[in-house]
Picture (cartoon, one colour):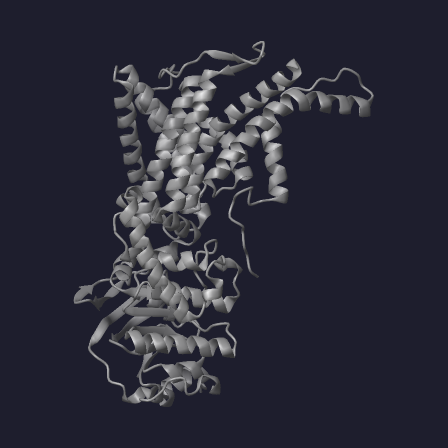
Length: 274
Length: 313
């Protein structure tokens, strides 16, 4: 638990104040056949915070993220985003409105270089019309250069200059995770969804990743929703924690509150049935 | 000396035939690049485009009008395929999409027969069909038709290669082929990409259909030539436009040379080893491409130009 200590500078997480909710999930229900993945869960994501979603395996954390960015449509409930109350999100709508994400099992474009992967993050920032793009040389090229400059900034920020041209399939796991974060950052997101950004990483890699997440949050004011199993990291970097268990929300509060919550302790340590 | 000219003639006719294979293979590559799926319906699209085109010509329309209307039909076709089939299969395994294209192929074949009937239509769009004789004593024959077809194929490929390599669509295409979910998450409009790619594949199918149709007549057997595209793809790599061309050339030249020079050599070897005289072998042309493809699968499964298959364990 000590490895990620003191990553966050003062002011401490507990004293930070956050703005209005940017995303509100109400009574979300999602099932696959007979299995209830998410059972009547409501919570909100507030502007500028780092929100962690934790819970044992199969608690519905990834399903929750998939609802937020529109891969899954909840069977009932609503998502309020950008002043619109929607029955569910649509991936394109989410991406176009500043929701970026990474995946639990890295989903990179494996045959493409780091640079090209990051450039795909700029798709929506470029001129919308594809065909026009293909026919119109000059302006399209200027636009490309502009976006390339932004991507270079992201590359510098994540310290991945050396692997700019490497096909990402060849990179070690930790770096792939970093490139995936880079692609999401290239979208200049308002809300960044991270699905286990530190899974399978060693201590140094986790520290680096925690640092990047916090820097993104603090420097760009990006709201961050992350799923993570490493409790040390979670307690250290998040402002608020939502705990899911068997698809239900069992706690929602600051790391300290959650840590002291009896339901959470039961869910994680198991409870004696007598 | 005439030996040499004969060799050259065999080689050239092989290369010309190769460009025709490339044309068909190209349609496969485009769709494979965009969706990671082998489009079983490509051969049928060649047939369908050719049938529409020849049908309009027989109604007395000028060539240009018939071609433009057919391209329009192929775009509409691409749009409906995306709307009715692909859209509902986002994020499914490639094998499921592949099965869907088999369904599409059968539907289109039935539809084509329903609209245009099953007769063989001769097609002549005015590509010259005389022969030139080259060489000091005219030893080598070149079919003008073959040459024209090769030039058309070459142009088409150059344009497409540039289009997909140097535009943003190329990158979006590769992204979609690599990972649908990730592509969606960065906001690449999957649906638009699919319509574009199927439209372009439809256009390529029309060109291939016109050229093959001029040579063999527009008939249902045209959809079978798609099979010849398979070894071409295996050689060139499923994801490479230039690969489709080089693959086609190698297969075309290889099978002609194997037929003329390889068959007697093999026959001689067999008769030497078995002691039986006067063995003659023919039909090498029929299987040469597939055997070559098999060797590629064994030793270089990604093909000559395909993206390296990188797998971490």
